[in-house]
Image 1 (cartoon, rainbow, N blue to C red):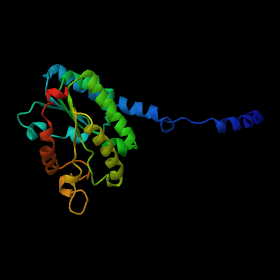
Image 2: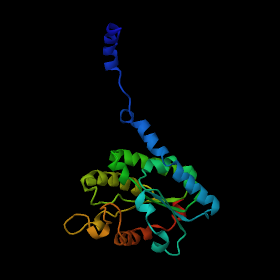
Image 3: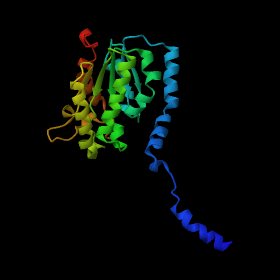
Image 4: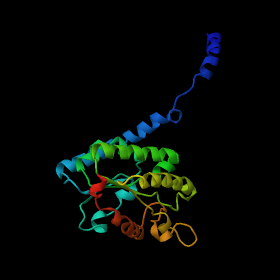
Length: 232
């Protein structure tokens, strides 16, 4: 029996143990599916209070989720559908369920921050953004997408070059499409020393302070009007 066990050891040693880390696609799918309860809550909210068509929909990660839209943009028909920690791919996956029902005239998106922090390359961020835009073009023709650049945060300053690379790629796409607009919040969030302005961030150095949102309000609001008819 011992001899038989020893004979199988070489086989045991060469059989790989498959984990999520070994299968990035599976890990990504598992990460996306964890948002199912959140999306179900959005759907329930839409059933209880059916959205009106032609409004402004804010989507993306925690910088969206924590944004007090009613206070920031009084008088605008704006709905918040941010979910903290999300990637662009999450909004792509659940697009038909939490974006389409609103039939917005404008979609304001802040996402990509967590993507880069999670190891995605600038090219991958661009590809996911393009998939989101393709969803809009197919299901919501004429809707404008306003992409808010990935912010230069204190906590993730070590990733700023990758984030700026992703920003540059998306900005180039936006420049070629009348229904895409890019909002540069990078430079306005830097001090004279070229570093992120501390007063714009919460204590965690990642999320925005009230002063940070006040800055964003002024930068984003001019982009929230519907696309001109000639762009449709």
